[in-house]
Amino acid sequence: MKITNWISADFHTGDLLIEGQLSLPDGEAKGPPILLLHPHPQRGGDMHNPLLMVVAGELSALDRPLMRFNFRGTGRSDGVYDGALEFEEVLSAIDLLTERYPDSGGVSIVGYSFGGWMGLKAAVGDERVTSFAYIAPPFAIFDPVEGVGEIPLLIVHGQNDDFSSPEGIERWREVLPKSAEWSSIPNCDHFFAGHAKETAGIVKSFLAKQRP
Image 1 (cartoon, one colour):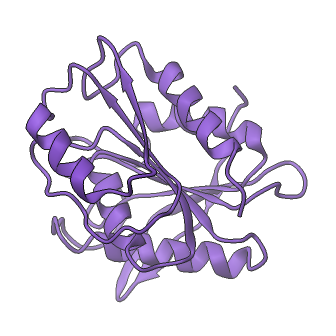
Image 2: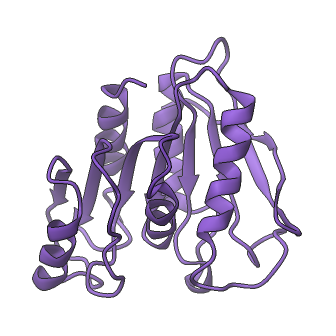
């Protein structure tokens, strides 16, 4: 796992100034930039989330630009938590990345829990999102996101996730692309304690085989 260095990359969503950061590869980028989206801001989630930082460290070995940001009302980001409109920040971050890397072939997204939910909402109908890894969808709490389309999609979840249920998983399976890859981690809960590196490796392997 490489050491990931971050530089400031604040951006705007409407009138809101959103706190963002970029990690750049040492040389020329070898693939589309990767956008990392943090878990629920009202439950302690922010862009410094430990699991996402382990994932970022693994993904830095792919020599692709990485971006993370704080949703509205979190850290230095303006505004207050909404619970429905945060996908607008995702779209603004995609704008920034595609403007900065116009020849990259799109953007990959890695979202954890709430962040993945907002990321999927942003990905509906947006051809700039070319691959998506969703860590720990709260199957039992959040409604499935319909209309995602046949983008390469990975779902990683813990078998002991308290925010999941067999019924919830089936609801999500019914509306997500049939081509989606599912990876279930035994003895793992929603917070991936003791499974961060394993999870990061699964996400890295998935994104490494995608092509823009």
